[in-house]
Structures are given as C-alpha cells and as structure tokens.
Image (cartoon, rainbow, N blue to C red):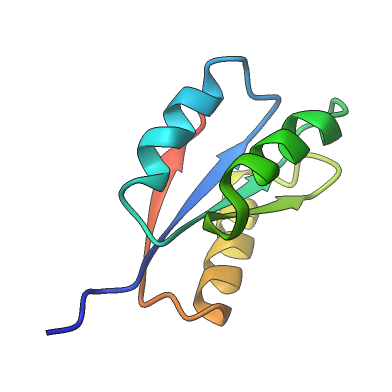
Length: 94
C-alpha cells in the first residue's frame, strides 16, 4: 500500500522567532510544507535561512502583501496539488 501524499500549507504574517520550532514539527509529518507568506515586513533573510535548512521539504511563496487568509490558503492548495499532493492540511504560524 502506498502512503498518502500529504502537504501542509502554513499562511504566515510577520512570523516571530518561535516559528522555526513549529515548522520543525510540521515538516516531520508531511511530504512538503508550503509557506504562503502574507507579511508586510521584509522577511527575505528569515525565509532564506529556512529554505536553506529544509531544502525541497519547504516551499516558500512570498505574496509581498497581505492577501488575506482564504486567498493565501487557495494559493497554497493550488501549488500543493500542482506538485502532486493528494491531501493538504492547514497549520497556523502561531
């Protein structure tokens, strides 16, 4: 029996320093975590360090502004399904 292909979508908005610890728990449970970032503050270095740490297990989409939760989740689901996910689970950044 083949395991299900499950990705996680996490919508972020100016995530704090505790977020990487939470991300660690998400990544261990799914094939890939897609961060859809609605931050209004510059976060390039923050997300670059996470991308370097997790490689292909992490996909970061920077919206450049706050598109709202529903639109950001839709972006994540569309991207996850386009990358072969069969199921998507949502997590909060806090």
